[in-house]
Amino acid sequence: MISHTDIAYLARLSRLAMSDADLAVFMPQLQQILAYIEQLRALDTTGIEPTAHVLPLRNVTRADDVGASLPQAAALQSAPQVGDGFFCVPAVIE
Amino acid sequence: MAQYEAVIGLEVHVQLNTATKLFCRCRNHFGDPPNTNVCPVCLGLPGALPVVNQAAVAHAVKTGLLLNCTIAAFSKFDRKHYFYPDLPKAYQISQYDLPVCRAGWLEILLNEQPRRIGITRVHMEEDAGKLMHDEGGGGSVVDLNRTGTPLLEIVSEPELHSPDAAYAYLTTLKQLISYLGVSDCNMEEGSLRCDANVSVRPVGVTTLGTKVEIKNMNSFKGVHKALSYEIERQTKAVSAGQAIVQETRLFDTVQEKTVSMRSKEEAHDYRYFPDPDLAPMTFSAAQVEAVRATLPELPRARKERFAAQFALSDYDATLLTSERAMAEYFEATVQAGASGKAAANWIANNLLTALNAAHLTLAQCRITPAQLADMIALVESNAISSTNAKNDVFPVMFATGASPQAIVDEKGLRQVSDTTQIDAWVRAALEQNPAVMAALTSGKAKAAGTLVGAVMRLSQGKANPALVNARIAELTRAYLPPPPEPA
Figure 1: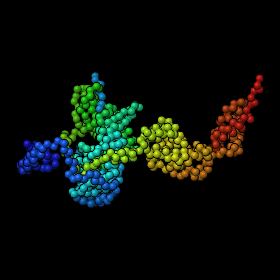
Figure 2 (figure 1 turned 180 degrees about the vertical axis):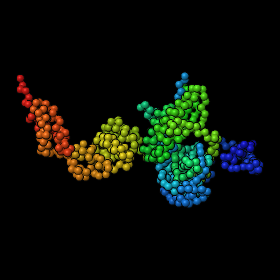
Figure 3 (figure 1 turned 30 degrees about the vertical axis):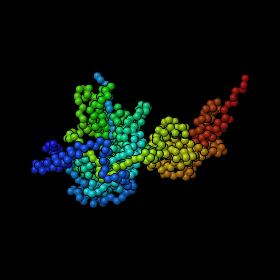
Figure 4 (figure 1 turned 90 degrees about the vertical axis):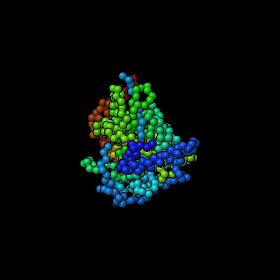
C-alpha cells in the first residue's frame, strides 16, 4: 500500500508541488498502477533476459564529426533569465 | 592503542578528447565563450534524441583493455535522475549495471614494489555543465558547453592503504591514459577529476569501517593532503571511541583540511533505468581483440626496450618514457641519426630544462628531433664544440627553431681543428702568461694545463679542445728541463 509519505517523497523527487486535493486524486491512481505491477511481478520470469530496450536495435552510433551548434542567443532565448551569455539561476549553495 | 589502517577507493573521472560530445555533434572543447557549443540534445530540449559517438565508445574499450578489464559483451546506457542547474535534462546519461568494462587491475609501484590495484569498473557517462557562483551573493550562472562531454568513470577497489598509494595510483593511471591518447588528463582544466572514499579500521580486521567521501581535490598533491588529513581525523575519532558519520566532505585547499558538506541529508534516489533513447551496445570478442591490437607500447615495456636497445641507464629510460610524446621525440631523434646515449643526454639535460624554464610542453617545442640529431652530429664530428653547442647553438635553436647549421654558419662557430691555427693560439697564450712559462722551465709540467682556458678564449671557444690539449702538451715540452740522465 502506498502511503502519504511515499507520495510526498515522490513529489519531492519530481519537484512537483502537491496539494492535499492533488493527493486525493493521484493516490488511488498510483495505487492502481502499483496493483498492476504486482500482477506482473507474480509471473515467473526465471531464465528470461531482462529487456534493455524494446526495439531490436544495437550499436546505433555516429562518426566523431563536428556539426553546427546553436548560436548563443538561440541557446539562451527560452531561459527566464540570462546575462553575459550565461543562464542565470537562483544561488545554489552546498 | 590499536593500530589502524586506512582503506581508500578512488573514483576518477576522465574527459575523453573526442572532437565532439558524447551524444551530439557539438564541439567538445574547453575555453570557448559560454553556451556556444550547445544544441537541442545537450540543452535537453524536448524531442531531441541522443546518438552515441563511436570514437568515445572506442576510447572506453581501449581504456578498459589498458586497465586489464573484461569488456562487456552487452552494455547499455541508463538515466540517473537528479535536479541541479548544471544538468538540463534533470538526468545524466550514465551506465548503471552493465558498464562497458569490469574487473580489471592497474599495477602501481609502491616503495619500488609492484602492486596490483583492482579496478571495479569503467563506465561511460556524460559530463554536466559548469555552474559558477556569484561571490557577491547574487545568483549562480550556468555554462552548458561542458554538458554532454564524454567521461569515463574509473572506479578502483578499496585496495589502497595510504595517501602515497593513492598518489601512485593516480600518477600511474594518468600516465597510462595519456599514453593511450584518449584524454588530455589536465586536472587544471578539469579533464581529470578524482573523488576518494576513505575509511579506517584496526589492523587485522577485514570488514570495512564507515566510509567518508571526499570531493573537491583539484590536484594529485591535494588528494594526498586530503587523505592524510582525513585518515588522521578518522583514526583519532575511532581511537577515542567516536563513530564516523557517513557523509561527503569537501577538501578546503586553503586550510588543507576536509570539512563536512552539511547538505540536507536526503538519501540519494537516482531512479536509474535504461535510457529508451539509446540502443544497447554489443562487443564481440573479435572486435575487442582488434582494439587490443591497436594499443600503444606502454611505458614499462617501452622503458625496458629503451634500456636494452639504446644502452640507457634505468634513470634515463624511465625519464624518457614517462610521457609518450617524449618517448616518441627521443626515438625520432635516434632515427634521424643520433646515438641513443647522446639523444638521451641532450633531451634529459638540455631540452627538458629549457622547456621547464619556458613553461612549454614538448608539443610546443620548436626544435624538431631531426634538428637535434643534426646538432648532435655537428658535435660528434667535431664541427662544433659541445660547449658552443650548449651555450650558443642550442639556445638559439630553442628560441627560434632555426637549423643548427644555419646558426653555426651565422655565428661563425665552426670548430677549428687546423693545427697551424691552434699552434699560433698556444704560442700567443704562452707569451701572455710568463708565469706559466716560468713554472714550466722549473719543471712543473702541470702548469701547461692552465693554458687551455687562455687558448679557448683566444679562439672564442672555437678551438677543438682535444687538439688544444694535444698541441699544448707538444709545444710546452720544449720548455721543460731535460729528464734526468739514467744512472
